[in-house]
Image (cartoon, rainbow, N blue to C red; front, side):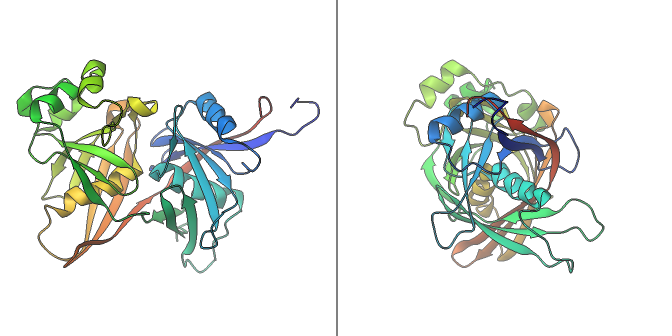
Length: 308
């Protein structure tokens, strides 16, 4: 395809889980990805070299409105949060999804590899950025035990005493290894060790995505980081699929029923502060529903004119 004989393929970039430019998690969105095969999508995601790129396609399921395929620079993901919220809000920005003037929410259902993902979009009454609230394709649940304390400490280049009790692998469509730490200072000094990763979390491990965190139970607040070198993500500024899976861990420290709200702060160590607002509905069975909310700032528009 040459510049002279084609218009190219449009893209947007957005900063997601923030209301400030240059914060949050950058995302590339291709709103018209029909005709691209898997290899082309992977090459394009590698070219953008962001943690993820969202490709918008027609759905293949009758119960879905759109289909998203989501790629890191190295692999395709079955489900992800910031590409879902950012992708939907990019379509709102383009006018592909309209919002009513009365402030009522608009629901779209996104087909992802892990299953249908409902997203409600709400306009801001004061004229600010719209907000997207997404569900999960699966109920958050623990899926595997974690390695031992010494191995977890080695993964993060921390002393053994920095690792708190309760590490586990949980998923809401994408599995993560959650590692609670004892202090904020321990989170700040995490440094992933590639040799420990290869030894402790080899190919085929339940998850190779490591999510250290410090949990403030009284304030229902979490400070976190996410290291995903195995997926081509050195460190992620905001990880929505991890926040939703984290509900499985958080539910274990809640004692009542009803809806609880947690705030997750991520990306501070990278200079890209992000805020993820998580709601968990709890009943006698445990988690009955989970929702994750965020905004996005549209940053750039352009066209891919070569290699597609």
